[in-house]
Amino acid sequence: MLFAVVVLAPELAPDLGIEPTQIGFYSALVWVGASTGSLFSPGPIRRFGAVRMSQLGLALSSIVLLAPLIGSWWVTLLGGLLVGFGYGPFTPGSTQILTNVTQEHERPLVLAIKQAAAPIGVMLGGALLPSIALKWGWQAALLCVTAFGFLFAFAVQPLRKFTDERRTEEEQSRTFALALVFSNSRLRNLTVFSFVFSASQMCVFTFLVIDMVERIGLEYRLAGFSLAIVQVGGFVSRLVWGYLSERWIPGRILLVAISIMGSISLIGLASTDERWSFVAIGFICALLGMTIAGWNGIFLAEVVKGIPKEQLASAVGTAVCFLYSGLVVGPALFSAVVYLTDSYPSAYMGLAAVVGFSGLLVGGARSKGDIE
Image (cartoon, rainbow, N blue to C red; front, side, top):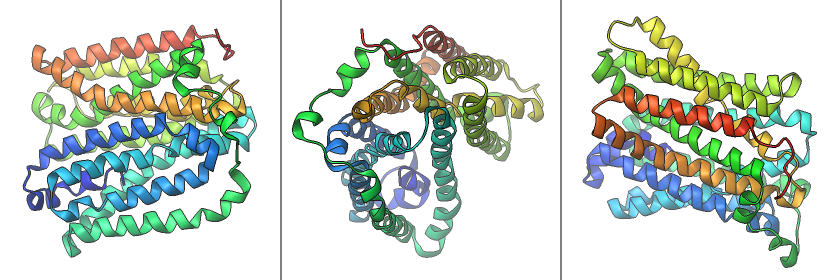
């Protein structure tokens, strides 16, 4: 749902009277909506339950995803904002459900598997939606996504009796999400880490193909394949990091290692030029995927450590709010640096510096989630 309109941009943009590149505004509003929805979701999750809020979010996103059918670009932008808002409760809600039914040592792998589902959805959308659009029109493609959205909203109904809990108004208002995170040094550092890594992740996803074509001189097909390598690296590494964290390496130490390798991979990307072989470039892309695109599950497992059960949704909701904010802010800042310096390598080096710094913050964080 989050990427359906973006994937269909070449087909639907002419009908909306815009250039396909303007879809970037839609994508930004999706993440603004997701950030806002995540921040304000903990209270409703505690009141109505994680599954119920996920159902409502899925229904909302399913409806407003059809906004382009009206034929107005401004209505489509509003639809993008609401699609993201509907997505807001998903990560806090699903993380709370899985945390409640797992032991602490199991959570890194379980949450990593959950996070690995996201790139699968993106890959399926990228593979199927264009074909549907070419055969039956982009309207049919959006209707298919909406239909499946409602289907799964109904399909999870039986899970409510096993997962959703009711709480009183007094319990719901006990902890405000932002206050919880900012009063906890460990959560603050993890939140900064997520903002930096999500910003870096989106910068690479957004600009890698353009950079490979314009600066390195790669053929367009190979440049696209470079991004695919990053995506595959992110999918595989989410499972690998989760397994390592469950069995051998503490999650906090693993996040520090990921930040170090992420900095190295960004420095390597900044060093590439037209003399590099595609094998060498592919290696850098794989390392990028394993680091800046593979950290999500371990991050969530660290966020929930030591957090009381009634505060889980608040902690995750706020942390994920800043994570989504990085997806919006990162590409804008990256573009500004490239514009001012006329240099992609300079922008990559800046990312490498902040990625390394965020790892130092996590490494220096207290192992217990004590409230200051």
